[in-house]
Image (cartoon, rainbow, N blue to C red; front, side, top):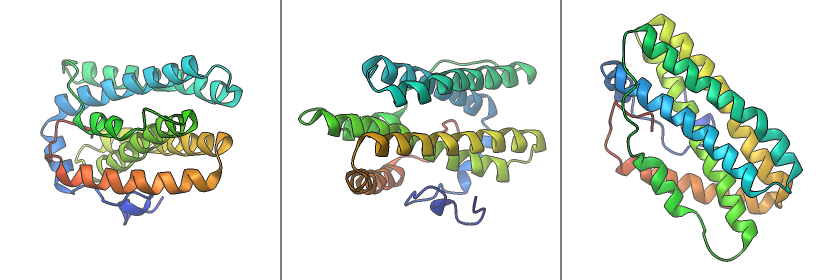
Length: 201
C-alpha cells in the first residue's frame, strides 16, 4: 500500500485529517471501545447479508469466514482494553455510518438495493483501513502501531471482497458508476463531520 497518499489507497476522495491521530492517542479507552463495537457491527452486518440473500451462494461462502474474523477482531480489541486496565464503554451512535445508510437506495430495483448494501460495507471497510493506517503510522505506542497495521491489512482485504461480490452479481460498469457516486458522497460526509478522537469514523 502507498504510505504517502492515504486518499489513493482505496479510491477515497478525502484523506483523514492528520490531527485525528493525535486526538485518538489521548482518547485511547474511547477509541478502542468504538473500534470494538465497529468490529461487532461488521460481524452482524455480514450475518444479516447472509440471512437476506441465502440464494447467493458465493456471497454466503465468502462472508461466512468474515463473520468469524470480525468477531475475532472484537475479541482482540476487548483483550487489548483489558490488558491496559481500560473498560469497554457503551456503544455510541455512529453518525458516519448512519449518513451512509441514508444514501442507500431503499425502493425500486432490488439489484440496486443489493448493490448499495455491498458498497456501503465496502466503503466502511475502506475508511476503516485508511484510519487504521493513520494509527499504524502516527501513534507513539509501537505495540499499537503494529496492532493497527494488522487491522489495516485485514480491512483492505474486506474492502476488495465486497467490491468483488458486487461485480460477481452485477454488471461491472454499473458497479463502477455507483461506486464513484458513493465515494463523492462519502467525501462530503467527511468534510461535514466534527473531527473527534473518540471515534474510528
